[in-house]
Amino acid sequence: MDASLPLLKGKKGIVVGIANENSIAYGCAKEIHNTGAELLLGYGTEKSEPYIQPLLADLGNPDLVLCDVTDDEQLENLFQHAKDKWGKIDFLVHCIAFCPKDDLFGRVTDCSREGFKIAMDISCYSFIRMAHLAEPLMTDGGTLLTMTYYGSEKVVPNYNIMGPVKAALESSVRYLASDLGSKGIRVHALSPGPIKTRAASGIDHFEALLNASAEHTPIQQQVTIEDVGDVAVGMISDSAKSLTGHIAYVDSGYHILG
Image 1 (cartoon, one colour):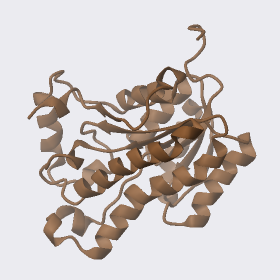
Image 2 (spheres, one colour; image 1 turned 45 degrees about the vertical axis):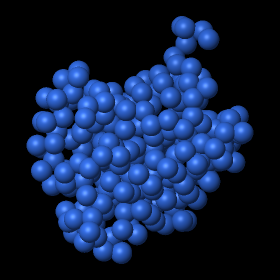
Image 3 (cartoon, helix red, strand yellow; image 1 turned 90 degrees about the vertical axis):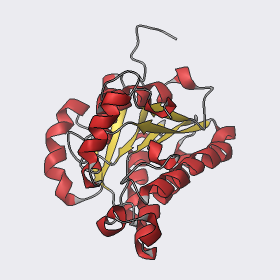
């Protein structure tokens, strides 16, 4: 590998879930762009567009496509846009999660059937569906990334129903990695520590979780969206071509503690 070239020079791909300058999707898109890749961005609601437009210049002015992941037509349009633009893609970064507030704030025991279905559909199934749509465009192999959290494997106060949902997402990563490995498509989840994003602000007592995480991690610092983006770059790069099916913790070491 030529060390003088940007790590992702020549790669092209999709980042979905960008909402504003504090979103993990933006942190990933920024670092991926800075290391030479071309981007296509997907966003979930028209309300987000005024917050996203000012960010585009720093990302190389990528195309921006509305993509509500509960709408099959919009999902298919996003990948068709990528096909029309490039003919193929090398990576997909999925930064999407949602749960209705009544179910997110309540006990797992009390979660409604509808709330559970919505959370699973948007936070987990959308990644599976995107993997299906990305597969025929990854003609030279590629990388699929999604975002999880430590609450998938341990009980984290106030994370509630998103714990089981993220556990399902992590299991999906392993099965997708098995399904797609023969085609050179690698699948991973990144597991960031608490980051102050719009989505995280919906978690009850999130500020306390954020502060406690920074105080008690081995490195004793809060994780940033840029930190997550840096790991995303590494996973997408050819340097990680022998890795698949990983849960990569970007949490200052919090997951090693009891």
